[in-house]
Amino acid sequence: MRYFCIAITILLTGCATTQEPNYYVSPSEYESYSCDQLSKEMHRISTKRQQALAKNQGNSIFDTALKAYSISQGYGYSDEKNTELEALNNTYEVLDRLLIKEGC
Image (tube, rainbow, N blue to C red; front, side):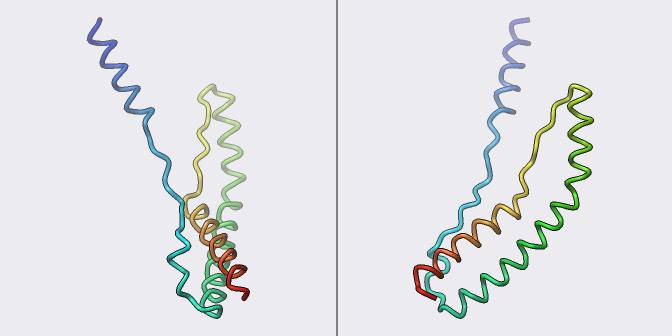
């Protein structure tokens, strides 16, 4: 019984140590860009961001139904983040700050 408890503790500890993905975007990646390049990159990211948002909203009805069912059955629900959208949001924010900083 003692070994069983130790094995369960180790197993549960291993499951609890998942790491959050890093969505950090370094401003230094875009510092050498001209105002025109920054604007074009921001437009490109903005388009991708809108597509990811539309895709995410399309899944929201299904996610809401799944959430309601899971909770009603006592399973709980883990709300996963959209990693692509998080990365695009951070890139957009960095580009916006650089555009302001450069006075474009």
